[in-house]
Image (tube, rainbow, N blue to C red):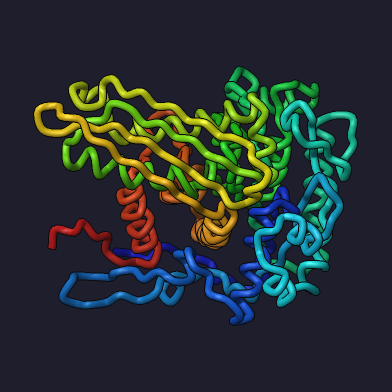
Length: 432
C-alpha cells in the first residue's frame, strides 16, 4: 500500500486548551510534562504505550505506535489556552485536587508559566459558573477575531510550527441544530448579529478553522457538529473531531453492549447513575447542560444493539441516565449501573457495575492522544470529520450520509487500520 505523504513533525507544536484551568486540562498538561521528564508513566495513552501489528501474523511485527507513526515528540509541545478564571495552571491544578502536591511540584515552574488568556463566555450557556476573566466585544464575530489574534500571537511568541486546539471546558446548555448552523454564510451572519444560537464553543471553533488549527471537541456541545462547520473544515483543509470524551460509564457501555449483542442476550433495561463533585458535576447540575450530556450518553446503546434489527432482544429497552452533583467526591466519580438482561427462553438475569473512577485521570491520556493524532492528520492532509478517532468519544461525529460507530472494539480496529494506511502498511482484516 502506498504511504501517505506526511510532513515531518518538525519544530514546536502548540496546544491551546479551552478551559485550561479546569481539572481535565491541568491533569492533562501536568501529566504530559511529568511524563516527558521521565518522572511518570502516561498510562492510558495509546500514542505512548500501545503497539500495532504490521503485516501477517507470522511476521511477528508489533512495534510501538510512536516508533512507526511520525508523531510529535512530547518535548516539542508548548501549552497555552483560555479560561474564565485568572489562576495560572499550577494554582488551578491545586484547586482541582486531582494530582498530588508532590506530583505538581515536579513541574511547578512550567505550570506557573501558563497564564490563561481571557475567555469567550456567555452565562446563558453555562448557568452554574460565573466567569471573571472574560473577553468583551460588540459581537460574537468580534470575539472570534479576538480569539484569532490570540492564536496568532501564541504562535509568534512561542515560535511554533503548528497548533492544535482542544476543548476541555464545561458542557454548554443543549442547542438544537437550526438554520443558522446549516450553511457557512448563515453561520457568519448569525455571529455578526449576536444570534443567541451561537455558543462560545462555536466562536472558538470558527476562529481555529479560519487559522487552519485542528479542533477537538471534548464536550457534547454542538460546536463543529453541523454542516456549516463541516464545509468550513473542508475549505480550510483542517481536521475536526468530537464529541464528548469517552472515559468512565459510557466507556463501559461500549464494552458491555457489544458483549450482549455478540452473545444474542436480551436487554430489558439499563439504569445508570453518577455522583461527581468537580466543576463538571456542578455545571451538569443545571438541567440545560445535563440535557446536552444526556443526549450524548443515551445514544450509545441504541446504536450498538440496533433494536430495529433485533426487536425481540432490544425492542423495548428502558434506558435512564442520571448525574448527581456531590461535592465531597470532587473529581473521584462513581458510576453505578443496574442492567436487566435475559437469556435462554427469556429467563431474567442481572449485571451490576460500580465503577469508582477518577474522571480527569481517565480523560488526560485521551487529550494527549487526540492532540497528537490531529496534528498527524493535519500533516497528512486529512480534513473534515476524523471518524477514525471515534474511539475516544461518547457521541462520535458523523455526516448525514453515515451513521456513528459506537462499538469500542470496531472503533479500535478502525483507528489502527487508519494508522496502517497512513504509514503505507496493509490494513488487517484478521482472517489470516
